[in-house]
Image (cartoon, rainbow, N blue to C red; front, side, top):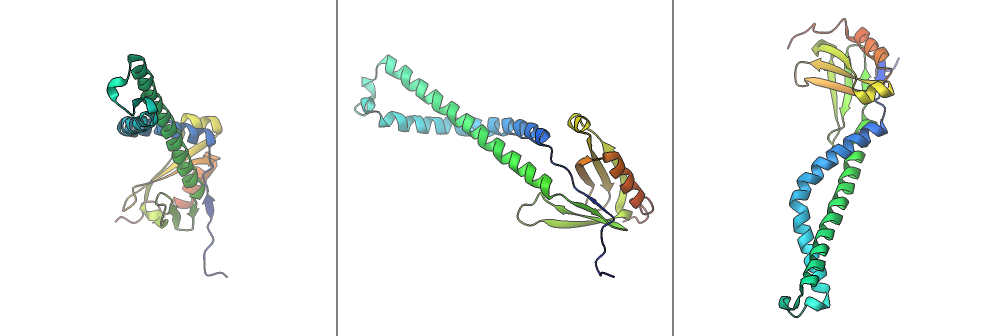
Length: 195
């Protein structure tokens, strides 16, 4: 007999590319608007100034610039800001998408006879393993959003009292079966000990 107990149920969320892409795009728009409103004007002016200073026509004096040259340089300033904004949006989208994908691929929930364990994948440097006794669980619910209904996956939320208030297991295939198995495992223990 082994000294380590094998889990009775292992739940791994599936990775949904479309849902992650939509989340990434929405979060990227918000972050790009926030950072863009701060960075794009500063970087656009700085890069535009560098571009203009490289041009030989303006090196002598700013008074020698004609109206048509000013319009051309204004276009350069605007174009640089647009390119910086688009580049910032693409970079932020890739960062957000990869972080959501990394988190989804590292989530594993293991249900044992009287407790469950999972890793907190939100902390990149040190993953913390949490253990929750079934006696700390107050409620187990199943929910679906529009993406999940379309892809036949769901989210199981486990409410607890103590240091961890809520555990969400998102994008589970066969959510009704998994939900019922979790209820069957935890039912004898739920709420038996109050802290």
